[in-house]
Amino acid sequence: MRSVLRTPGVPRLFGAFCVAALPTGALGLLIVLHTQALTGSYGLGGLTAGAYALALGVSGPLLARVVDRRGQTLVLRAGAAVTAGAIAALAALPDGAPFALVLIAAALAGVAQPPVSACMRALWPDLVPDPDGRHAAYSLETVVLELVYICGPGVIVAGIGSWSIRAALAACAALVLCGNLAFAADRASRAWRPHRERPGGSAGALAAPGVRLIVVVFALAGLAVGAVDVAVPAILTPLGQRDLTGVMLALWGAGSVAAGTLNSRARAATRPARRLALLMAGWGAIHGAVGLGRSPVAVGLLLLAAGATIAPTFVCANGMLDRLAPTGTLTEAFTWLSTGLSVGIAAGSALAGALVDAASPALALAVCGAAGLVGALLVAAGATGPLAASPPLSSRCA
Picture 1 (cartoon, rainbow, N blue to C red):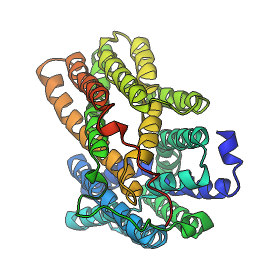
Picture 2 (tube, rainbow, N blue to C red):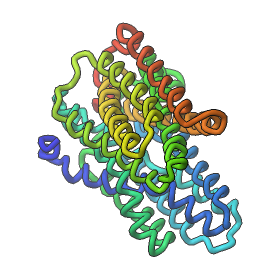
Picture 3 (cartoon, one colour):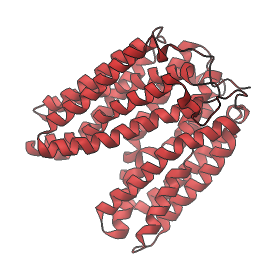
Picture 4 (spheres, rainbow, N blue to C red):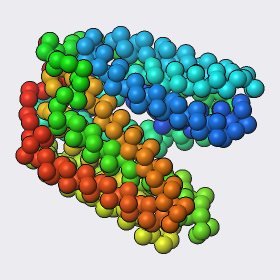
């Protein structure tokens, strides 16, 4: 990863990306806390955070499609301004403000949020043409995003938020605005041009069978992630250790960060579909086994191992999308992967909640983890079919 950061032009661009991405891990929790303070209801807080997440998931591929057609600059600049304005407006709402205004501001922030992560991924093939170097670059980005989700709540929510939730939201608005504008101002981003050739029709990146398969597979993998958020506190509660939930989830993230760092030193896969199938099998099996923990120590160790499957899986899938996405649709393809995972997480949370109430956290994790094994079988079956396609790099400029 150090060699990637020594590539000319990369440190400044990647630094801007990190600033723009930092609020991502904190905004959901801040929206819940701020809405509860305004309305007195955690239920409305959850509804508002859900509206933000849903808007973000729906708009991501649409904004990325505009990037693939018009370039990065306009989407990043306009999206940053609208998102920062919506977050600032949410922070400025007075106590007792109509809930509709809270909901609209949160949804607007999600709809307009620029797909800066997908933009960063779309630039890697041009910045680091070597396959092994690009593998390290995807690993670096994945590790940073994991750190964002671990550190974002700690730095912004626990730090600034402990003094003022409104100030924490204002800080998020400033980071989104400054980070995206700095990214858009970088020469590499400004110089990126859409490819002249694009697939016909409205399917975009989903026109490729391989992209559709990976989206489905990540939706199945997301079931286990959603189950962890519900099942882990349910496991710890009868042990009298529910307060350790945050520690457990931090270990989960730490496992991903450690594995992503080690994975960056490996060579790019010569048979990426086979590697993805093995990683997905590990993802499903180990997440499903978390419910077998009978003590906080056992649960923590299992979560550490489960987390170790996450970053390498993302890195492998991102590298495959370089070759699978139709020409001129790579940015959009990256966002569909995230959307598929988000859909799976939402379904996994709902399914796990029902299974925890009806049976046990162990069953919830086993069932949702089994979905990851199904995903592994789908990848293995597609290795010689849709996942074997190798068109030219989709991100190449015209």
